[in-house]
Length: 274
Image (cartoon, rainbow, N blue to C red; front, side, top):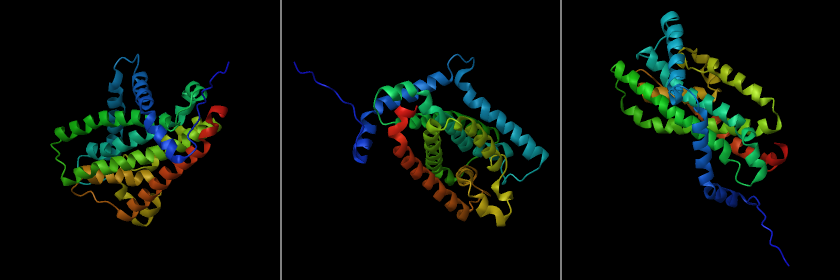
């Protein structure tokens, strides 16, 4: 009597792999929805934490940089200046934290069945993107409070959201893959997020950076992303330093492409190492 054996094997070619991504799209929806539910499960105020954290950070930055340091605000209320940067920064930092642990936290699933592993960190970024959309309500509230009306540049905001998404995915893929092999990265990521907040123009305008250092400062890819958000949201006196923005955009593209490359290169070893 002959028995049939079912062998589940990863796609051997790139085209097969990307087809598998579409084939397993329901798993992607499930993981993203599960993570959204788990994040705020058994919390008293639930999803309101997505509003409270960036709001309190904005208040602190407004007091420190706007009231005490008296830094320029590009002709807009300082809370709006800060929060236009908080939106992409919170999305980016949250995505890094979620992505870096995504493979390890789904170790049981990864070691048992085949599916394109790229689904796991991508679903984590989507969870952070949901928080980003919720936080956008604060921006709308601030605009209403200060009677601030954006100009035509606001129509370009989706472009900068895509750039922020690419930056989050690129760095997130690197960290998620590295964290599987080197568990030290679970300690490195919080430091990177904290350090990145200080060297990124979140609480202040990047226009205060001396001109001779602007291009070097733009080696931080989030500088271009944040400046882009401010250019789109604030309008008016807000200007984009195009040389620096182009450099940041190039670095984001490099991180995104190399992140996918390294993730795919190490993907086959995840089930063994994890």
